[in-house]
Image (cartoon, rainbow over all chains, first blue to last red; front, side, top):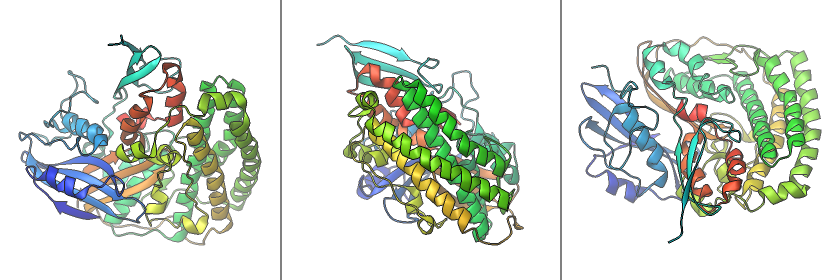
Length: 114
Length: 361
């Protein structure tokens, strides 16, 4: 597993330069609460036909900053992006709330206890 | 501009096996757009894994994500934690774990085949496959004590050993199942009404499989050569007879055939495991508390199951990320619906073998 740091402003250009649909399989978008209002966001890829090759692009952010969507580069990212909107209460460009949670559900359950 | 109508399907519907709601936009009988709501059985498993249970209990919690592939969930989590603890299982434990995962694949694929037969109106075939599936269910129950949600795998090993009687039962049942698979394969290949319902229906092209990151049997039926068993080195799959099964037409027929041929391959692997079971302990002491971050990928019956676990050296984990195959496969599935006939939607959906319990977790 290789982790590569990126930033939200450079995320799209980094992913665009890296991601080749016939070479890399996009696994998921992930979020990890770091406490004190911070979050680590991850975009995870594995290589077709190669053993144990997984690359994780990660960026550190807070909960207020809007997250750019990689949907135009990776159409299958829609599920993961909608999931982090619900689970962490993030704003991801173009991703709707409500994949899992209703209006009256516990909101952003995976965000750290405040 | 042609007139379009919206037709809802689900969340409760006689042709649906799982709680999912589709909103099809149709032009006459042709689907031109689709929207899906998948969150009906969300249970907050990821939250529970970090707030309510200690890391030694989480393996049994994640087994509740899905009844069908419970063994794959608990194996993925357990392997991720074992990696963080610096533990590598001995060969006997690896073989026993592989055995249960492959048995799980066989019965899950058979369930899917039964449902696709049912959706083609072939209820006798549905009953026949479900009857044959009992051969595997009997073996799984004998090994683990349960028919579903097995709780067989634990950190540092497995909870039950194989006795010689159990090995005999596995050999006997899998030999019978092999013979039955030949009959089933012939039926799926040659039956005229099944061909009408399956061939050329619900096609996912290879190009779309790449674009939408299809995975598991859905991808392999379109010719996309991806299988976690060939892309990870946690288990010696190749040494036990693993072969990647590929088809090329990408339709329901191809998806059925990937599953039929994978069942045959998994039977071979299980027989090889039982015949070459290494000597060793089935449970070893693993000390410490997980610290750091690691990932595990396992080929579940529906495709790649991904776990990311992060620990901080205490009994409570910081993050357990579960990415299930159906969750990732939904964009590709939605693409297949577009252009298909509305009447084919239930059969197409059954051929995806969707698991909403996994998806919503």
